[in-house]
Each structure stands twice: as structure tokens, then as C-alpha cells.
Length: 467
Image (cartoon, rainbow, N blue to C red; front, side, top):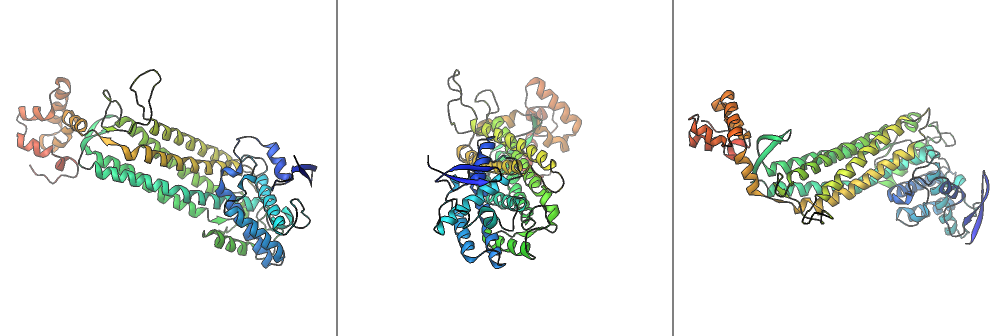
């Protein structure tokens, strides 16, 4: 393999001649092999890093800290990364020591070498354009990396929310389709009162829709960035006015309403916005898992369970039991949710681990938030296309459950009293008779009155029926 020699603080090392990354990236790749997931797994983060570097280059150009030739070459390289080129050169594991320095240097070296080729030089000829002196000018990992994370998470959220919105729409469509089907509602897995299957699915849709708004609110918190604070928030090695100008340029490049943090020292060490965002993903994961539990219960059977709905069959369910089909799609959503919930705990612990003016555990935070977004996107698409859109209802089963339930006695309480209703319910439970038959038999109400009170119009909403 052809190589080129590069030098850093620790000495010389041979780097593959065709690599766009350099010596510091290679050292990090050798040091960290934790997850097997390289930075390239998250293109949104690479895109965000490139935008940060481009904004810094233009600001340094305006402040006479970079020549126009160098700034143009750096921005040219950044545009390539923004458009998705060369992402395979981001080889460092996302979990790394050094508070993200390895990720930042991976970006600096790749950008520098693309820029060098643009200027007509060989890769590694850093005397003409340097990863630290030029690409990283007026920056530290401690402001460039978390700012890129704030942007990258927003880009990932932009990719995720349409999948969540589409799942919500699929649930709304099922709510309309099932609006006429009366069934029993249940509390604590016991018969409660009647509802429609449409109401059940509409509730699923509404609860997911709430978190689309919450994600938007969480993204707003990520628009306050510490770029320009450099090492600890004091802005050392930047000219006066740099922080304001570089954030303005980054806002223009990214089309996100970014603003400088009101206190850069605080913003450099605080992980609160990431914790909040992760918490929203946990909340959503809990909702998706609960909904998946409900789908599994409602479809249980097919002969000995609730059997009120049918999930589309996706694959044979057993290597030993012929004919068995399992609810594999909701089960996969459950497991995705568990991972997202666990990831939120990791984010929580990493955020708490910050010390003094920096949190060295930022890579763990960023990895878990981005990974949760990626998993939730895929899982929501899976649940919608391979489960929700294919669900059918067993109307006769739903009707039979209502007819045989003692829960419908609740609709008669205002008319026969709680004591009579309790007695009738107990008798129905132990004799197998229906509530309707027992009420009529004891002349507590006429058959006509019972039919009116137990009609869907009376039981499914606040009653306008007067007996």
C-alpha cells in the first residue's frame, strides 16, 4: 500500500496515500474501536461539521485572518461534504475520548486535503493549507463540535418527523375506517365501557401528534450555540466580534435560526438542550411501545385471545408450531423503544459527568441522540407500512364482546341506581346471563328503554337521551 508520512505531537506515522484523512484521524481510528459505528454512519453530523467549517472560513476571511484563496478552497471542500461526497473518509468511531477532538480533526483533515487538491497540491502538503491553522482557525473542538451536534440533530429530526407524521396519518385513516365499529373499552385489562375502534385508533394518532410539536420545541433549544467561545467559552484566539458574525453566517448556510448563547462559558459546559431533546425521544418511545402493546393485545388469538383486529401476517411465527403467525412488527417497535429509553439514560449519565468548564462525554450524548433518531425513523416507517395500513377489524368479535360484557351496566346506573347495577352485574357474571336480559326480567327498565340506553348514540359520548 502506498503511504505518505505525516507528523504530529507524538511523532511520524504513515498514512495511506489516497486517504483524505490524516495522522490524527488515523491515531483515533487505532485508539477507538468501541461501537464499530464510524462518524460516516451519521451523514447529518458530517454535513453540520462542514457547515461550521465553511462559516468559520468565511468569517476568518472577512476579518483578514484567511486569504480569499484559502477561504474559497475550504468552502469548496465543505460544499463537497454537504452534498454527500467523501463521507467514507470519516472513519473515527463515534464513541471516543477527548470530548470530540478526534471527530473535529477528522473533519479538519478531510477538508484540508480536499482543499489542497483544489489548490493544485498533494494531500498532506499542509504547508500550503493546514488542518489546524487554517481549517480550524478561530475554533476549538469545544465550540465547533457541540455546535455541529446541535445542527446535526436538527437535520436528523427534519428527516425523522415526516415518518412520524405519516404514521400519525395512517392511524387517522384507520380511525375513520373503524369509526362505526362498537367495541368494549378496557381499564386494567378488565371490561370498562363501550367505545368505537375508531376512537381507539384516533387516540393513538393524537398522542403521536403531540410529540411532533414537542420535537419542534426541543429543536428550538438547539438553536442557541456556543460557536465562537473556543476552548471554554471565553473566546480566546478569536478577534472581537467573531462569535456574532460566525453564528450569523452559519445560520444563513444552514437555514436554521441559530443565535449565539447568551453566556458562552455556560453553554460550553452545559448539556441541558441535549438532555431535553433525548427526553422527548424517550417520551415518544414510551408512547410507541404502549401502542404496540395494545396492538398485540387487540390482535391476540386468533381463537383464544381478544381477536378484535387482525395484523397483516408478515412471516411464519414458529419453527415448531404450524400455522402460527406472530405480531413481529409491533414486537420490533417495542424493542426499538427499549433501546431509545436506555439511550436516554446514557445521555443523562453522560450529561451529569461534565466537570468544570467542559463535558468530555459529549460523543456519548451525540451518538445516542442521533442513533435514537435513526432507529425511530426506521421503526416508524416499518410500523406504518408493514402493520398499521394493513390492519383489519373483526366486527363480529367486537360486537360479541359488547353484547356479553357486564361493563355496559355503567350506562344504566343513572336510571336504576348503583346498588341495583352492582347486583345485576354480579348476577350476570355468575350466571352467564346478559345484563340486558336481567334488567328487563326484573322490570327495572322496559326493553325499549334498555335498547335506547345501550345504543351507541347513548354509550359512546355524553348522553342526550332522557328516559
